[in-house]
Image (cartoon, rainbow, N blue to C red; front, side):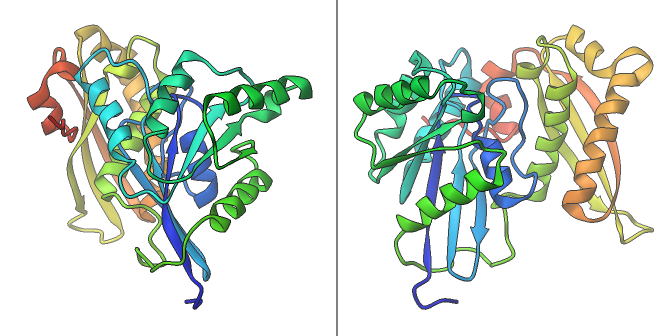
Length: 302
C-alpha cells in the first residue's frame, strides 16, 4: 500500500433517476446497484468500494429524495439523510439536460446538511444540444448553493467517470484501507440477489407493479450434490391480486422470463451455477405496515 494512501466515504445524493446507480456501476465495472427507468429504484443505502494501490473510495449510493406517500417512502428518505453521517465528500447529482426542479431543491436540502464539501455533478450532458443551456443550468445551481466544485459527466462514459474519480481523489484525505482490496460491495449476497430479481421485475412489468414489489430471498444454499451450484428460493411480494397475476403472466410466462433474466446476472455475481425458484405472495398495503417493512429488511428509524 502506498505511503500516501488516500481513502474516504463519498455520498451520491440526488432526486430519483438522475443516474446515481448507473454511475456507481460504471465506476466499479460491476452490476452491483440495480438500475431501471422507473423512479425510486434504489431503496436501501448501497456501499460500492473502489480500490487501487493508491486509494480506496467507498461510494454510498442513496435512494432518490422524493415526496413520501407511505412508510417505505419515509424509510427511503431517512436512509438518504442518515447516509450523510461520516462522509468525507458529497456528490450532488442532477440531470444536466434539465434546469433545477423542485425535486432537485428537495434533494439539495439534504445534501446541504452534510458536514463536508459538496460537489455538483451534472449528468446526462450527452442529451444537451445547446451549450448556452448548459451554462445557464450551471449558473442556476451555483445560485442555490456554494458548491466546493463541479463537473459535467455522462455516467455511462468511461472518460467521464475517470474524470470524476480524479476530482474525488484530489479532494480525499490520506487514510487507511477500510475494506479488503478485493471487496467491491458492503452488502450480503442475499441482498444483491433480491435486488437483481427486483430489477428484472421493474424492467419487465407495467407501471401498476414496480413500486408495490418487494423481494425476499427465503433460502440461499449450496446444492447438496453439486458444490458449484446454489439453490435459491425467493418470494416476490405484491399488494394486490391483480399485480400477482401480472407477475405470473399467462401460463407462467412472465415469472419464467423474470427468473431467466435474473439467473444470468446472479450467475455472474456468484460465479457458480444457479437453480432459482420464484414464488409470488400478496401482502395488502405492505408499504405502510411498519412491522412488515421490518421483516422485509426496511428498518424504520423513529
